[in-house]
Length: 560
Image 1 (cartoon, one colour):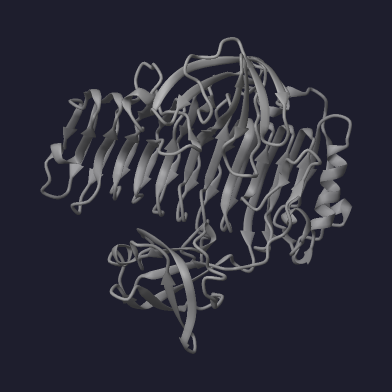
Image 2 (cartoon, rainbow, N blue to C red; image 1 turned 90 degrees about the horizontal axis):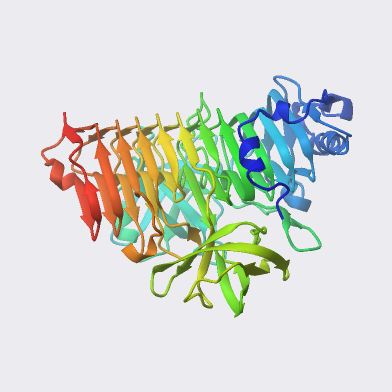
């Protein structure tokens, strides 16, 4: 359950964390707990002792690292080796410019069941690296394999077949050009062999291997995820996961968490993740390639993946590049209806195992029928009775007609998403994947597959996209589409003023690839006061694709 109720939570979002508690914070210096920070000593235990002491302090506290130090987090079995902040309030972790250097068997920080937490002024990195990379010597489209030699300083990949490289996300690989730009093609490795010393051959899963390999060539680079034993997950007696292997910084079941001035150079999975949490803010954060190196990736999954409830996240003044998935993904996870008894509805959480049902009395839920692909209305929860991990009985004021087993429920947002002054460099997929209402302003999108992408195509991720504003942004050379929206049917959308409103943006397209806009089943799209520069011979009309859409006005786009 969440700690505070709206509208208080929404108001607190606007306040600096220091203003939430007037008491002078106690300072806990990690050096006083034995942390060395020489990049060699395993400092995990010392850092955790400092954090634990600060959590147990009476009143606000600051855990302070030493500037310029490198604190090593060596392989550690319990809790995925993470530093853990659990059950804390009014706590700041001030890195003071230090680096946390982690082994890829583990992750870096978990924030669990906490409120008013600030993590700031840290650099995150891994040694050894969680990936290897090398220039491809062979690209065999017909047979479906590539061969490469790892670059200087990069490890040999782990040899093995399908017993090791199953068709899972941890078997992904990507292809990157010599200039550092992603080809936007990726495959899942089936096996790796060594046909001659130092030369490694990758074969792949999937029916689209030839199609993906045609997008790359000899001289391009392949990036392959390395295989390391993973630490154990840590759970509460009730079943909730305190720490998981999902991300460098994982926030779970917490409120008002500020991540500020954090730069990450590597991530075995996601870089920042939050679920079951409210009012998450990223300010001046980055997931980027480490300067002064030839690294081709900055993270091996999403840069920032935020599964929200009612108070939506804010991402400000940040940068994301070279990611092996999406840069920012803001969504609301679904609850699935299992049983109805009058106004009582038994729901089960419909996202991955690490996530739990988080519904409070007073929450308003959006109801959706995936079979008929239609919006069923909204319902207000008056009572919640837990029914075990990932399950709860919800009592509604009124149950909308037609609700039945298999239908989905999403929290109805009470504040908008805000993504402002964020830069996106070349990466694999989407820069911003967003569903809830929000504003995206003053951002730059460079060489990404999708710029702003809003879609629902399955039972896990929602809500139905609506009331998304894009203002004063620049989109350059998006290989699929600068703007893309899609929902299962027009009837899936709840009543709303509009779906997408674009104002004062500039688009640059060329090379006979990439659209300005692609939309399916969407009602209410407008593009106003915007410019497009077309570097090839395509007409503006060919850059805009709408299928089964209504109330679309793109007359505000002018060709430079």
